[in-house]
Image 1: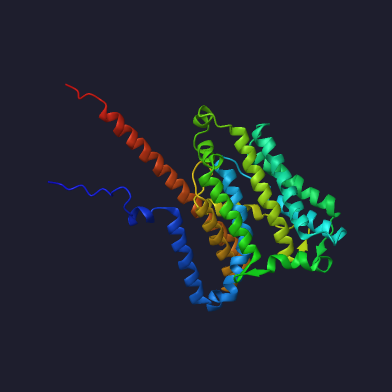
Image 2: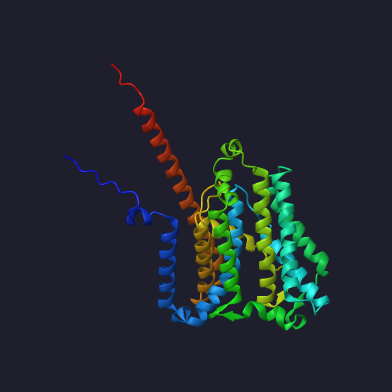
Length: 347
């Protein structure tokens, strides 16, 4: 007599848990950090880990916003240009009006980011232009606008007020304010995805747009919303980037959008939409940040740094494609098995 050993509902299943992307990515991240620490012990010093964590915050926040866009089968390639333009506008305002409160400058950067994101969302959701075409075009537009508003000039640290520069470096409970900003942004996105109807509907919009439409979900409104949110986060990151690195210039965060998309892909967010978790996006961003910070520490050439990062991205995309194909085959097998049970046996 055979005994069935299927896992019981509600019982923790280690094998199933380890098949998920997030635990595997977390284990790889910790293992990679330990290996790098063996090669260069300074990497695991408290000071260096604090720097790595602070440097990763902007990528984490942008990946959280990008994840929302990708969930709806979209993509925002203008996110880095949005960040750069928002940061430049904040820097120019404080240059012209040094007495302006820092809260106003942050709000101005976020408003610029929100406006740019809304423009993307309008073209994608209501004009029905493919997202990659829209955001490629607006990426160039936003980059060009940086030249227009700045006249091609730079805003450097000696032209910035102390409060403008010091806010991202302030500490609370041992962590910089940038880390706390990232914690707040990730927490808000988590609540939005898990505890609001609009957030949960994004999975339906990306997973099966036709079914979502039949359920009464307003697809254009959801698409418009996610581009606005991505732009809003990019605006906040624009101020943080300029203040942390104490400079605003026309090529700020050039090509950073590739790292943002790569972080989402590494974290298991499906480019086809409808699949992914916020935890995956955050871990993907941390994974990339550790790679970019660790390679110089172990004296890897800058040319190899880009190549290694590219290889990691390709491997992640290949794993995603394999997982999605496996899931499709499993659904088909279950569908065939289900239909087979309903057939009458042939005489």
